[in-house]
Length: 249
Ligand SMILES: Cc1cc2nc3c(=O)[nH]c(=O)nc-3n(C[C@H](O)[C@H](O)[C@H](O)COP(=O)(O)OP(=O)(O)OC[C@H]3O[C@@H](n4cnc5c(N)ncnc54)[C@H](O)[C@@H]3O)c2cc1C
Image (cartoon, rainbow, N blue to C red; front, side, top):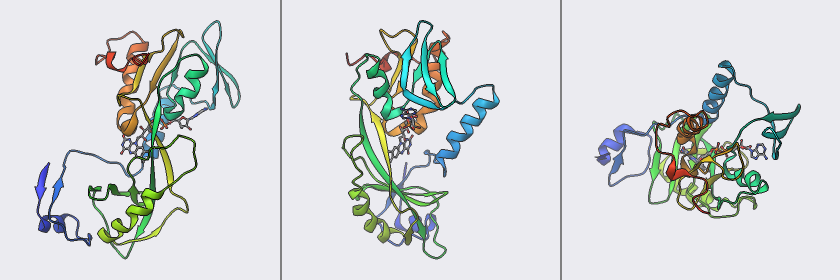
C-alpha cells in the first residue's frame, strides 16, 4: 500500500465530504460491481461446457448402494459422489449423514444507497474508525457492515448498519436507501478460519467444500479446482491437508 495525503484523497475521490488526516491506498485488491452476475456467468460457462444445473432440496440427501440421492424439483437426482458446498447450511446436510463439524457463522448486512446529485465514488473505501466499507456497485453505493455474532437463523438485527450509516453520510453525499430491508448474509466459519475441503471420513463418496468465511466469493473458484483435482485423482495444485474436514474430530 501507499500512504496518501489529504490532497491526493481529494484528487482520487473528489466527492468525499470529510477532511482526512491521510489515507492508505491499496492498489492490489480487485472488486466487482455485481457478484451475483459473476456467479451466474460461472454457472452459464459450466452448462456451456456440458454441465447441468438442477435444483433440489439438499437436506433430502441420502446414501444409496451406488452413491447418493437427493430430491430435485423434477424428481430424484442420483450420483456416485457428492460435494456438499452449501456455505453456512452445509452442516444441516452432513450432520444428518452422521458427520459433525463445528461450523458457525459471522453474519453481516449490506444496503444500497443512491447518491445525491452527480456524486460518484471511484473505488471501495474502508472506514476503519467506524468499521464499514462503502463501495460502488451496480445497484448503488453499498454499505457493508462488519461481523455480527449471532445464531444463523435468528431474526435480523441490523443495528450495525444503523450505527455506521450516519458516519458514511458524513463521508459521502448518500441519498436514499434503495432497498426497504438490509440484506443479511452469513459467513460460514470454522474455528481456525480455514475451509473444509476433501473427503468426509466414514461416508464414501461424500466431499466437503465449505467454510469459506469472509472470502468465499474470492476463494470459491480455487477451492472448487482443489476439490475437483482431489476427486479426479489428479495432482492437487496445493497440499490439501490443512483443510481436512475431520481436523476437529
Ligand atoms: C456482509 C458480507 C460481505 C462479504 N464480503 C465478501 C467479499 O468482499 N469477498 C469475498 O470473497 N467474500 C465475501 N463474503 C463471504 C462470502 O459471501 C461467503 O464466503 C460465500 O458466499 C460462501 O460461498 P458458498 O458458495 O460456500 O455459500 P453460499 O454463497 O452461502 O451459498 C450456499 C447456497 O446453498 C443454498 N442452500 C442452502 N440450503 C439449501 C438446501 N437445503 N437445499 C438446496 N440449496 C440450499 C443457498 O440457497 C445458497 O445458494 C461476504 C459475506 C458477507 C455476509
